Amino acid sequence: MNNLAHIKSLLKQSVQKSSGAQAVFFKTGPGHYAEHDQFIGVTVPALRKIAKDFSMLTRAEIQNLLESKINEERSLALFILVSQYQKAKNPIKDELYQFYLDNLKHVNNWNLVDASAHLIVGAHLINGDKEILIRLAKSEILWERRISIVSTWYFIRNDSLEWTFKIAELLLGDTHDLIHKAVGWMLREAGKRNEKQLIAFLEQHAQIMPRTMLRYAIEKFPEQRRKNYLIRRKA
Image 1 (cartoon, rainbow, N blue to C red):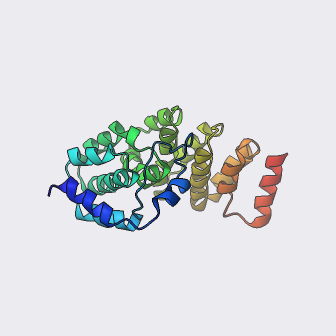
Image 2 (cartoon, rainbow, N blue to C red):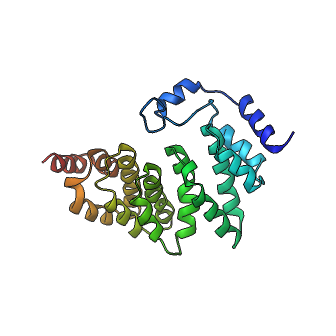
Image 3 (cartoon, rainbow, N blue to C red):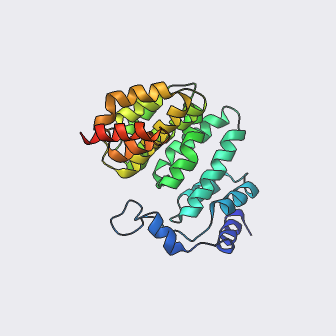
């Protein structure tokens, strides 16, 4: 049995969740953001175990999984790609980063973005030219915009906050709830590292921030301070 056939067999054996429940959770209904997606009901821990066992897949095999309509197969491909990137040295890191960029159209649900963007794009750009994040933030594609902000999570973990606030500012006017949540989440994470910088950003932008974005950003603040920001947002 070849690697891909073995993997697909293991995935079928690992089904635990109701695919119907996942479909509702990930909004796969007609007209929803993940209308394109299919789930079979494999948990993330099970996917990570399979990824560990098949960490040496070729790029062609990873490509095959990325092109699948099944979310778990794309998730598995990204877990393997992240693992390979973390273990690689240059110039292989450069190749894997470019491979990820070449396949952005397959990183097309929030769970896929959140499991990979910061660990490949963020990790690759932390000491380099970050202008691609601006292009992604201005993209018409929802998932590319989410990648732009979630990628900065790697910067935050390394106490570099400038680009989180820069991309957050670019996305203030975004109309999609998944962007509001992601931006608020990253702002909250940045605030854990430097609350003064988060407060400075909020003082400038809180009144115009989408409510969900603001609520996520201030989640760790004391209750009265949260209320004060929300009152200002209403005003």
